[in-house]
Length: 180
Image (cartoon, rainbow, N blue to C red; front, side, top):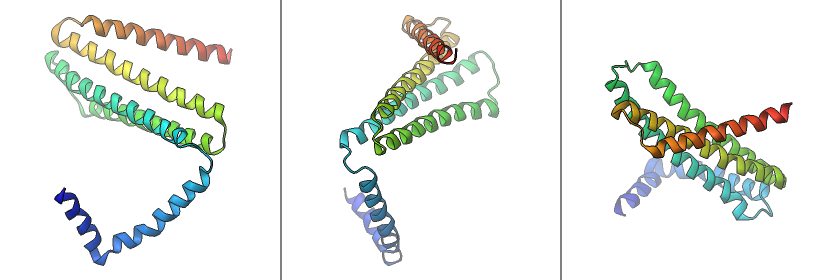
């Protein structure tokens, strides 16, 4: 507790409170702008997309880290060279998921502000669906890495891999029907 007070004191003491003075006006302006944009909107509608993105990104990141660590172990076991391009590929996968989720969050907020409830709910459900798909892919990848390391994939991973393929095929079929 004392450490956080010490940090706050440092912020306020820095150049005689210059950071505080500089941050005060924009933060007040942004707060007023948000109040104006989201006037009449229930807090639940604003918090729900944040919760979905937070849980989705957190779950993906936990699975991503497990997959990353197991992927390195599997590559070492199979004598596959771990190159910087493969590491960057992994980083960009994670970055793309985070950017996609936050873009969908921004669209959710836009539709809330414009009071387009059907679009808001659609994007909210899409965020949940994409979060599940991203997590299923990472889970399936963890299973493949475990199989490479131990020679056998646990049945739980096989089950979720089947679910992942079924969901993917269902989504692809729906998209093809939309454009046919």
